[in-house]
Amino acid sequence: LIISLPSLSIPIIVKELLKDLNKEIDEYALEKLMKYTWPGNIRELQNCIKRAATFCKSPLITQEYIVFND
Image 1: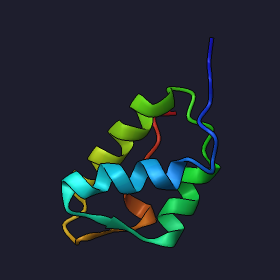
Image 2: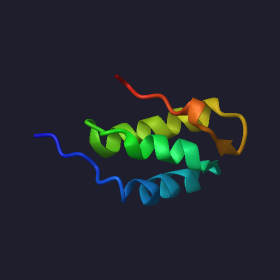
Image 3: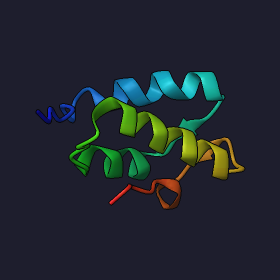
């Protein structure tokens, strides 16, 4: 059973995840996250955000750091 994340909840989840990482996300990166279907659900979203925060040296995560496990 695959349950996808509703796109409206993604900004809320992302902002909560980023609080702990002391990062923010720009609007284009957030839009990219919202367009993805998230077959791995919240765990996949969480891993994507952690990876982006790790590789992005700036306090603002941009869309080039958003990479999906396709």
